[in-house]
Image 1 (cartoon, rainbow, N blue to C red):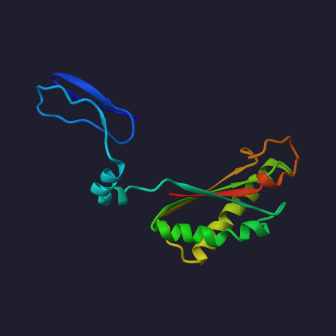
Image 2 (image 1 turned 30 degrees about the vertical axis):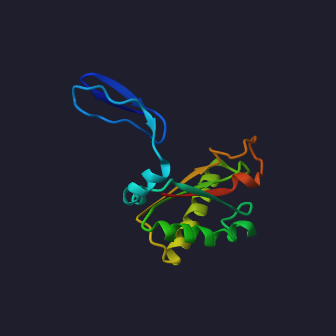
Length: 164
């Protein structure tokens, strides 16, 4: 992205981070673009920077085949998810369930939704404050690892949780 600084006498474009210009009058051209001191900018505008929204963070949780039971490695990540949400409270949490292609498409949709709902329930049971929560299922329609039909791919049996 970029910002054009325009006066009656001309325009300069600020298209790189930490660049600046000066204006002396509406009838004078803006000064040439110069590099600002990053540390000085961060210090001067710290109170504004601190209230900017953080970048969304996503975590993936994987499930046992045909169930809403987390695999052991994903169980270990739950604490990190709770810490992340508590750090960002109140926040918006999107929970999206997925499945592999083993089994019927409708069953996979329902299984992926069940997986997503189980993570939502777990967060609620642990009294994590969330401003808004969305839960949805993509079933087998959005695989992480593209496969043919009726393939049991562990990386596709997942729930993606995005905290923003």
